[in-house]
Length: 142
Image (tube, rainbow, N blue to C red; front, side):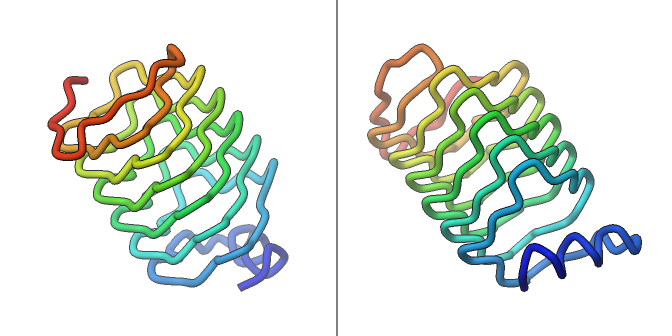
């Protein structure tokens, strides 16, 4: 699916995009709040500056995706593959990241207030304070 098709379908009221392929798609600065992308393939997907608040990205594959300054407040990214993703200055307040793979992810300066990180995997993960976390079998504290 292309950016244009996704935005047209969203504008027409569609919110269920579960299981779709959005590899190599750039939706930077788009407003797709409350959409459901559960189980979607979104590798090298770019959403810099987008509003993805309250979206569902459950079990999605988002390898090397970009979420710089993205609004992900209340988003559900549980069990998602977020390996090598950039969340630089993203707002993940209240987001569910339980069981997510955050290996190699960049969370520098990201807002994680009230986020659920239980069971998330951290390996060479850049944390909001600039530290690197390595807990390959971690159960993180939120």
